[in-house]
Image (cartoon, rainbow, N blue to C red; front, side, top):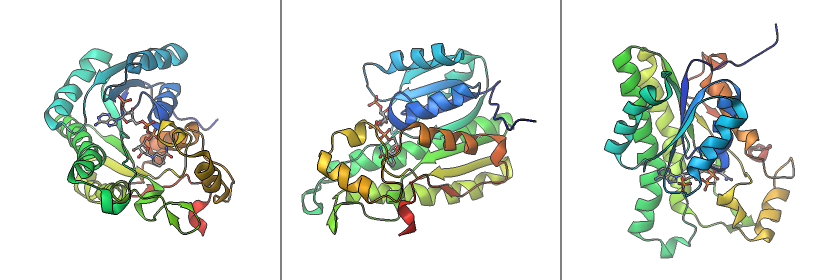
Amino acid sequence: MVYQIDLSGGTVVVTGGNRGIGLAISEAVASAGANVAILFHSHPKAHEAAEGVAKKHGVKVKAYQCDVSDAKKVKDTIEHIEKDLGTPITGLAANAGVSVVKPATELTPEDFHKVFDANVLGAFNSCQAVAQYWIQRKSKGSIVITSSMSSSLYNQKGLNEPLTQIFYNASKGAVSNMVKGLAAEWAPHSIRVNALEPGFCNTEQTSGMDPKIREWQASSVPMGRFSEPHEQGEPAVLLLSDKSSYMTGTILRPDGGFSVY
Ligand SMILES: NC(=O)c1ccc[n+]([C@@H]2O[C@H](COP(=O)([O-])OP(=O)(O)OC[C@H]3O[C@@H](n4cnc5c(N)ncnc54)[C@H](OP(=O)(O)O)[C@@H]3O)[C@@H](O)[C@H]2O)c1
């Protein structure tokens, strides 16, 4: 029989699922048959992105404006999804994230809150809300948190020239550790929690960078290039599916070989 991932009959929640890596996750889970609930911050084209995924894959997709750092809003949104889309939530990709790039001497408490509220508290709120939903229903589920290879290294823009995003890297270290704790606490409830740690990827987050930095970074990867968003979205589907039923508390790192050095 052909190896196949089938997520039909369920809904996957994808935070930041309207663009970049999140959109690629939305596309990938939709192509495996899942309905998709996209949580976005404020992008004017988020609903359009949802319609595009629905049309392309013949599944139901709805975009919800929801700042993931607002725990109550996240919980309320999660509570509406099953009724709206008609299928139970079976997976969560806690993917929303932001960065502030500045030398450490210039970073402010506001910068800290901007990054940690979205990347750490936001990921936690999303995980907690779906875990409560599953535990209440006594159903299993799978969570993937989009961390980054930056969780355990410091990015360069040239040889020995740091990219200067202390808070971002620290936030990714935090969520890569968080998957271990959540995996341990929720394993008895049949909830798996894993991290995806992308390497460089062609998205809006990286497109604004100086082309010379992008070129240097690409040349520092054994595969010699940035990844495309689908090269992150497709591995995420594996973690969200039963094909990874014995994986929890682990990290999957699609980085083109960057971490071998
Ligand atoms: N690109 C890379 O090279 C790379 C590498 C490693 C890891 N990552 C990680 O991968 C994830 C996606 O990155 P990306 O490059 O695809 O980013 P992106 O293109 O900048 O998109 C960010 C997404 O997150 C959403 N978002 C941000 N703050 C939010 C909040 N408070 N509440 C709800 N949604 C929020 C945005 O919503 P709006 O559209 O409404 O603003 C958008 O959908 C992030 O966690 C990032 O750190 C990226």
